[in-house]
Image (cartoon, rainbow, N blue to C red; front, side, top):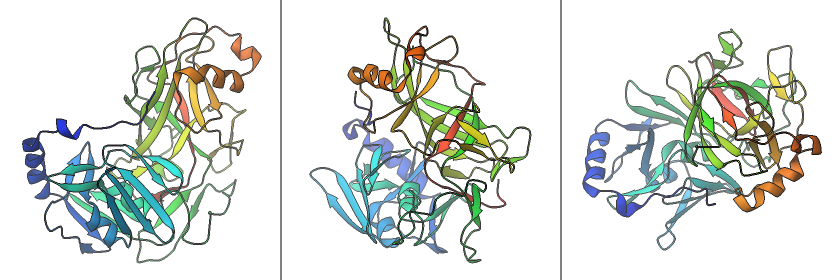
Length: 362
């Protein structure tokens, strides 16, 4: 099954696109390091709640070189050894060799190649803030941080401090103050959306709410923060095979409307897989990262969480063998059924990369 969504450019009515661009260009302003970015022809537009901007304007302003392959409709950009690839109409992009799923695909508007502003800015090391009142995107450029937590030319970030998953970085007063929630921190969530392997489809969106356990915040995230995601694989229960559903987290939105990209996988909240620290942080016990994590319909509950050892998109023909490799004989003897995740179900979001959180906001 092909999990990468595409959009048919031929199906986009030119008149509708032009009308949207005309409306959006009067409202949306992009500011980088205090300087308003000027776009000569096509102005920024909004698509599915995300801002798209002309590719050359944003890449070059952030110090990256860019190439456009007309035949494959592919954008390749590089900056200080960092390589980014985006293809028109595809949600899956790459940063170096890592696959990253964007919230919205790049597209063509009136002959101009438009790319998602937040993804590009954060991948190139920028800090992005959306000012709803002013319809303004504020970007602070950086040379030591990008979407995957790498720090310029000094290699991977240091291992997370187990007892301090939230730690300050960069005390430069000229930049927005923020903290970093370390890799392998677990964010407790409560689902808001019903999801079932019986009737869900790839691409179905879901929302969840952070569980602060009655406190005003969980580490740096305020009460009321919403986490968004989508279904990236689903299969109904078949004879002796359980139903399976895979969820991917995209971004979170704090109560003040500020959005942050997140990169992580589902994890259970049981004591044998997570540990709770004295500062209130929940951390994954196991430091290894399996390729993918799914819910499988074993037993009488909503299903069990299974880490399967593949980084490739899951296909129907292989899921049975992957589950056999990842589950115990006792688990496989349980009743098989469809996965049923109801509103109120508690799950964890295990961060696979650091999450940069603005201080004193939300």
